[in-house]
Structures are given as C-alpha cells and as structure tokens.
Amino acid sequence: MSDLNALLELNRDYIRSVQHGDVQRFEEILANDFLCSNPDASLIDRAAFLEQTAKPVTIANLEAHDVNVRVMGDVAIIHARTTYTLSDGRAGVGRYTDVWARRDGRWLAVSAHVTRG
Image (tube, rainbow, N blue to C red):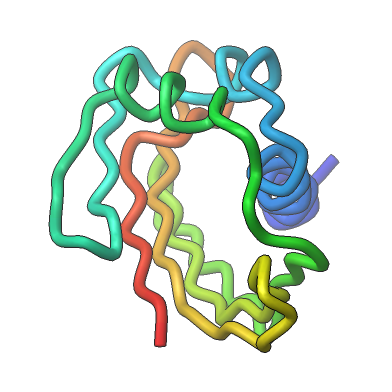
C-alpha cells in the first residue's frame, strides 16, 4: 500500500475512532509522545487524550472533508475540515491538522490540532 493510501486509511480510522470513542484503536495509532491541542486551547498528552476519548461522545455524523495529505519522507501532515451534529441538533464545523511520523516502519500520529467554529 502506498504511503498516501495508508495515511488516508489511518485518517478515516482516526475520525471513526473519535466518533465512536474507540480508545483501543487510538492506543494502536498514537505515538507514546503524542500531543493534542484542543479547541479550548489546552494541550494534552496521550494519556489525557485517551481519557478524553473514553468519555461519552456528544456529537454525531462526524465527517472529514477536503482531506489534504502531504508526505515528506518519514513525516506526513494531514489537514481537513469537519462537519458534525451537536447534541442539540445544530450543525458544527471545524478543522484539524494531524502530524504523522513513520516509526519502525509504521505510521503513528504524533500531534493533533483541533479547531471548532
């Protein structure tokens, strides 16, 4: 599988895992030194991200759009916009940037930055 196809599949897994609170999948695809910048401007480590993911999901219909994958050797950056439905039925939008690194032959997420509008 090409790097591009592998990263597109990992991106789909990441979005699906957010929507379904799939901590186990995140344990597989997040690097040990993973960091995430949340929409509230907090910066959390892998353990806090997994704890956050384990909480009940309050959005529905999460989808990624305009996914742009840039591969630069053993590093890749994915930019995309999101749409979702809030618990009160209103539409939500956002953007994210994920950084992936190839380590020991596998792509792992090392950083995420999430915004909501």
